[in-house]
Length: 347
Image (tube, rainbow, N blue to C red):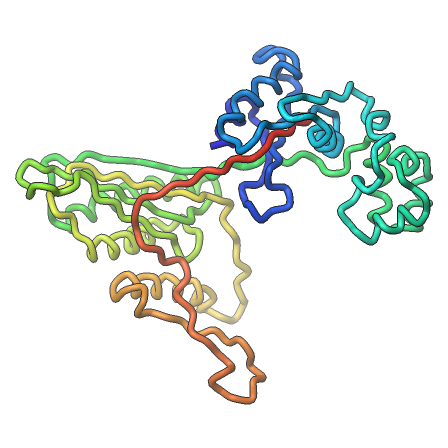
């Protein structure tokens, strides 16, 4: 939810939604060039903070600077609800009086900076780049550049997970799986072709069936949802159709279906595979994953397992392997989640 709010202000945003990540709690946005839409950069950041505040556990701190490092430090130095804006080109001046330990997360480098008497960022900026590299290696080059107000980590905007959705009405409503399969095939073919044309593959599939309750039993829900994670990202329409249909066969619709909607999510660049020259069954592992997924759907996720070699050198044979659940199989249902983090901004 926080990313969605931030994306309404800037097309280029970054941050982590993983609570275990070191950068969790930090949001970055590229704010230069948006004056015509939102006003000056400080005004834009204030608007962003106001939009994010209801979603956060505390009051956001904001910072603006010409480099990601300086903007992050500025946000950390700001009081709750306040903005620290570093004038363009003044990053080194802003950073100079601050502790040199901010330049690196490496505890060993921090300790050596203290031993050399380099307590402030300005002292590091005054040293020659060659001297820092000689003492600290590659990390020396990075901390020197940060201290001088130079960009060391190019901004990489967050790529929002892409979803493709397509639905078709069924007139008149049908209850036979074969008729439903015909419509599902059309949906899967259209969406898979869209993915393949852009070199993408989907990780999850969600099939929503809108039911006609005219002659259904009282209490019958108006919608049936079947969803699954694919064994591997795919743009294969036939594989998508078969796996979703296998799950639907286990939970057939309790009433005729009036509309079918297919959504493919988690789209990402399709991974290529280097094929061996003399091995015709190069894709057997991928096909095995899909077969295991279908077996798990048919017989139950708790009844299909795979063997994984854990310690081939173990003295006892039974300790060389272990049972693992089939990957990519999830129980269908409804759900959702959101991530709320703090706020930072950079030019």
